[in-house]
Length: 300
Image 1: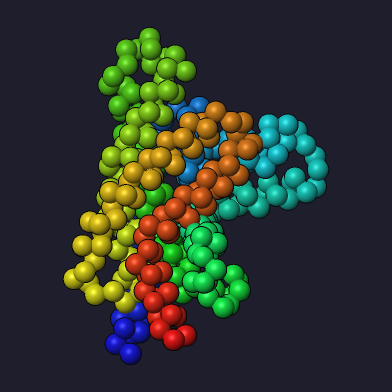
Image 2: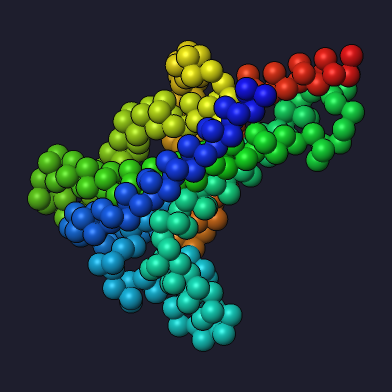
């Protein structure tokens, strides 16, 4: 009973944190928009893991429409008069203009949930026949675990949204500081240096902090884990998670930056679902083993 009470309190606390974080981001949004106005417009569409995050109040309607048309149907969609295209474009335009932050949070939560279900499917398939539960694959999915990761995703979507706004400024400042004027005006050189700096900032600054303070401890807290044991769990998993993150996203970023824009969002989501399945397998390892032990004990 005490464990269930802790879980309920953790769920409530997480929702409060997510809501507070969203309100904080909204309150500072005008300042963020002002800071990133100096980033060249040509660089806006290179964003990978949060495709809409650069579209803000300072972006013109024409620019928004161009990006949305590319995301929906490719560059040719800009001149399309198809009613379906117009409806989809208008819906996306409204979402980007009015509920951008909420869209990021919900998308992140959904991808985390799908990634966890994929991870549980792989775990079920890798079990030998004798250790598999009597229930079917669908029945064996731990929805409580998936729910915890969806909540994690709702918050991490907001965190990454904020990070990418900051990373744009940092990477652009880095480009300006290391390149001569002639090289900086070279679009290819500018984009390459900016991409590399953004990836390095993510790998060595954002990921360690976000993984250690949010992605790893939160699901454990929601599962009712004793607060005293969480630092040890984070320490034991953080190194593995960072290595796997570098493996997945170093390759994915190289691929995603070099595919047509109209395919980029779909490819990014596929890559993110795969990454979330890898994350889930690492972060939820003890939880899965404990559940299996309880099921074995119950069957015995």
